[in-house]
Amino acid sequence: MKKFISILISVILLAGCTDTHLELNSSSQDSSSFIVPDNSDSTDKSDSIDNSENTENSDDTPQTVSVNLVCAGDNLIHSPIYKQASRRTGGDGYDFRPVYEDVKDIVSTADLAILNQETIVTDEFEPSNYPTFCTPEDCGDQMVEMGFDAVSVSNNHLLDKGEKGLKATLKYWAEKHPEIILYGASEKENKDDIPTAEINGITFAFLGFMEHTNGLSLPSNSEVTITYLKEKERVKALVEKADEIADVVVVSAHYGVEVLDSVSDDQKQITKELVSWGADIIIGTQPHTVQPMEWVTKPDGGEAFVFYCLGNFVSAMDIPLGMLGIVGKITITKDLKTGDTMLSNPDAVPIVTHYDSGYSNIKIYRFENYTKELGEKHGCPYFDYSFAEKQFEKVVKIVDYLP
Image 1 (cartoon, rainbow, N blue to C red):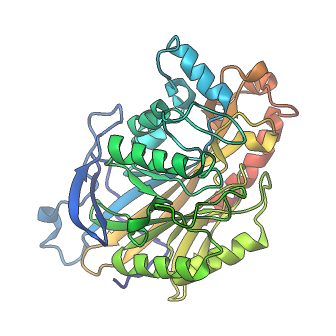
Image 2 (cartoon, one colour):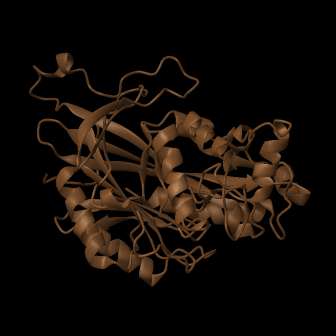
């Protein structure tokens, strides 16, 4: 499907959001319709699709539909996070909800919310910490409850528990949350399938690739499969295929130098290639801190958009840069008369992961809600409020610069 992605200078914006309707497809299965539950606290969300009865007779106003997309970085569940979640329930399960309380509504009010789940999620293995992570299923359940619609598992910790761990996390998502768009790994028999979803009349395709998996690999006869960014011919073929079947191609790329707040030459080159093959929105993760974002010109003259790195959604790292992240935002609008699909209003919500001494009271805060008093109590060595303020000033300047 040929499409034109450009900077949207003037868009008809409709108030509010609605229960998100997604039609999940792949190249080897019949279409199935799913309704993503409305997880927000609001009960008066309005439909974001234009009412055709009001526009079908108008020659002056094009009929449009739009999707408000948000994306969150590495959900990196270190042991202090899951141990605190266990203590909240007295050892009977895990309650992660307080960690995300201050950012929940950003996720729950989006039409499409995407998460990078940095650790495998399964109860088939005991919870574990760095360097080989495993996260309780309650965490995955509560990410869905919060409002995430799509989950990328393309990251360097995907094989922390080997093939069995990957199979276990694929089983968890497929059996407990079949409504979630899971991408970045799959059963081998489905290796050429591309997850797609129709949201508010706009078709999205989802692909996830990573640079490496910490030296671990799948056996040659494995029943599951992943794709590395270095497999250029395969990556190219998948992105081009996705471009043919969807209005918008979302690529989650796990790339870049860890704990570096500047973009590497490799990231820029990979991004350029992904865009040339048909990627429209690139969601970068891996460096564990905030990196710049920008428009990237497509071969047809249109514009794609890249968040080079969102940073951590949450973690218990002990490096100041690792405490800072963003939740990315962008609007996608489709003209139903012409079929043109446009991107607009890129934005970023700065967030801070805070904990007190001894990694206690781990919680994410929007920076606008984060006080100097909290910053003075941060348990991360060398972290202070002014450090965060200076780093996020760079983000604000970038956002202000973007058209």
